[in-house]
Image (cartoon, rainbow, N blue to C red; front, top):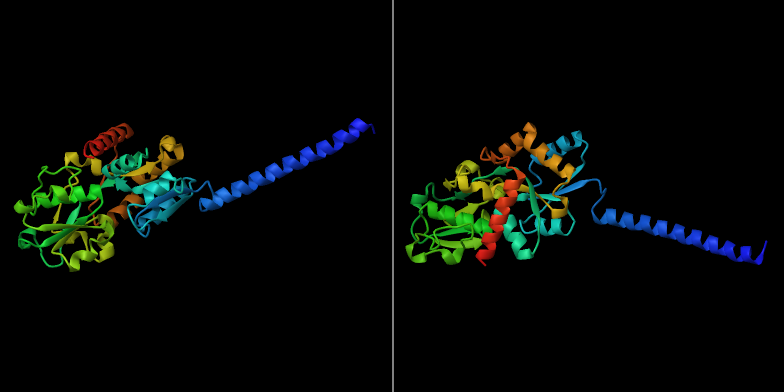
Length: 303
């Protein structure tokens, strides 16, 4: 063997060793990535508030029948699923309406997008002591959710019920500062949406989001007042599947929306959980995007 060959042989072995090391490191990195995402990267992780609702198991089974493995990730608070989606810890989420998403995107400089609709749910006012809004004495306290979009909707509901007056007439961005206290029958306090139901022991009435009604031992029929899901201006409050902008054309995610919308077993389960209040909606994506853009501009205008 020549001196030149003696030199090249170790070089070849060294190159082979380096190549093997690179491959091993790549496999390790891939494994670590899979673990940080909570498992198989082929599994679609969907964040929700209320994963214990039985229809999610029905939905997972319907998706599996179409060859899609779904993991439902539960969150206790509305503030959690959007940051998790933006960070890549989720693939989709389904818990919010368009106004909520608009407020999140603008205030967090994000571009999460709706990829399909589910339903519009009426928002209800509940009381343990009074069976009608007219029975609530002047000067009593009513609780509303404290997140910006649900608070605005709750305040408009209270104005419609004749309990308060809003100086701005009532918009998707009304807040406690817009309550005309002198012209209102009741005082309003804002609490986390998750605990408005628990506050019923201490207040005359509370506006409670649908996700928390039955968990509080209440029935949707117990509402003493509610807004209408049939209102033509209700589209900004339609609940939506949401993805990151780069995934808005993902065919698997579009199929998951379709499964939700078209599976009668899923829809029946949603209706059972909502106490028959859900109004299912199929809105074209272009209309959803336009509604989101308008809502985001409204958020900017009201900052």
